[in-house]
Image (cartoon, rainbow, N blue to C red; front, side, top):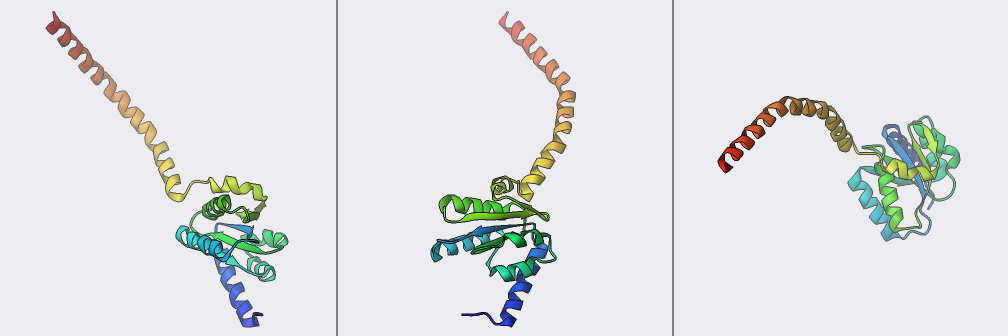
Length: 175
């Protein structure tokens, strides 16, 4: 069934609004996937904060025009699914990477982050980016390390004194 002009405008507006807020986009070819597999992928996407949409390429080109993802316009060829990362830059890459391990028919075609287009082989690197919570915890551990070392340095003379006294006491009790 062909889309009416109003429907096409609504799709372009919706995808453009998502693209304006997204951190990264993955375009993957879904040819050969069953409806059950696509439904499973969409469910996983909702749970992980990824916006997935199958859009005609001509409409997708119009939608990403004027956004950071305008660089993918030339690569929109064939049956593609667009996955936009809404929460952190690696969420769509993790989703597509995990799903394509189970289903070899899902093939990554384009990866874009921060207005730059990367090859499909960069999906692995993008999927290994830490989440927001992981980044904060890594930062906090780096900030906490010097303080911990300083406190250990201050406590060590007292601990050494206590260990020495305990050793002398044990030696006298043994004698």
